[in-house]
Image (tube, rainbow, N blue to C red; front, side):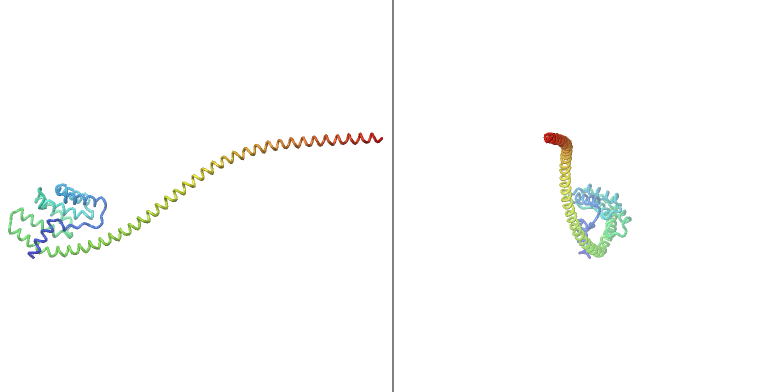
Length: 251
């Protein structure tokens, strides 16, 4: 048990016990990532504010529980030059009240006990809290193993979802490609329609001109037929005169 206690304390101080959910809403994930980024860059005040804001403004978020614990943890982190143990006590109390069934509830309770002991400067209580931490380390290890199993399952599910997403993306790309082809075909058809419309307009003009020409030709034809008729009538009259003249000559 004595060997487990320092190891667990080192893990807790390095922040490695914090497990992020595999999936979460984009805006909440961004807030959590920004808080983590601030922590890794040793901007601890900024990191605390971001964790605290996420826990307060998104209490139902999958990351709210983790953010609330991290906000308290930042206040006691050994590299944080602005440690605030009294505020950390309040933060861990609030965490236990808000998430009594959390996997981190025991850990929060342990830190709460240690901080109270330190704040009161009672060495015996601190030792008792450390002993309790050692006893709880076994339970915590089991919970961590369970969490790792759940994380592995979540990662497997995430990979499956990513695979499905890749397939959907490919289908979407195929649909978009097909859509582009259809748009191009439609554009060509519209162009052809415009050309045909122009050709039809030109054809209509040509037909109109031909109809007008036909009208003139019909009028000319009528005049020619009338002239032919008149000539025939003249020929008939001339033929009658010639017959009359021949008859008179015979007499």
